[in-house]
Length: 194
Image 1 (cartoon, rainbow, N blue to C red):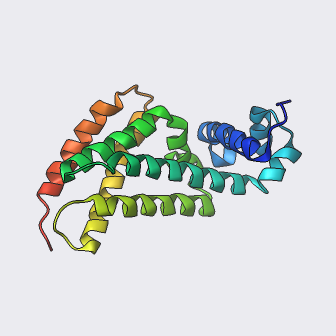
Image 2: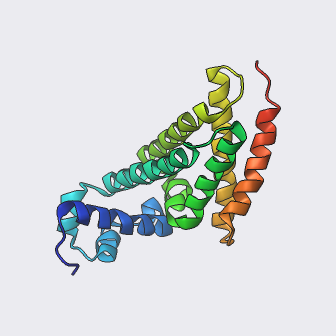
Image 3: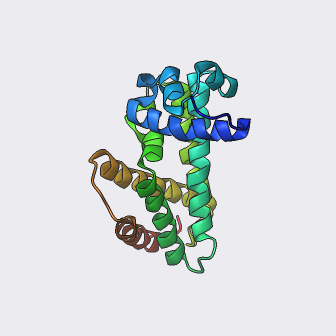
């Protein structure tokens, strides 16, 4: 049994462990028993913090999504050019993926795709990520065009990450981010106002 922690610390500990459980087993393959066992708590303690498996999963998606967007926002805050923003944004993203593959699998692995509410939560995260990236696109296009480009950038990063994580390849996030940023920047430079 895990030592008694304050409620907020226990909640964080459960979330940390649950990321691994869901990433490895998928939404449907993971159980509240699995999470409780991994966290070293009883099921009643687990249910004091989360009313259901879906509630726990949605809290995880929210938490991991906030961490990812915060990492990108922080990394790009000091950038002075569009190219620098592109490079720093991708570097933050790929460092996040390399540093926490379980968090990436939680969001974009195939395990949650059959649960409508979980799928909707990940979709919202993708939209939020594109919304956070959109203002960083430093080219002269209207807001709608910028949102479409931001969605493409998110999809490109997700696709590359999915390939790297699902194949189990070790990768240097700085090298991968530089390669993907070069592609994205070349594409952005070629964009013309509609």
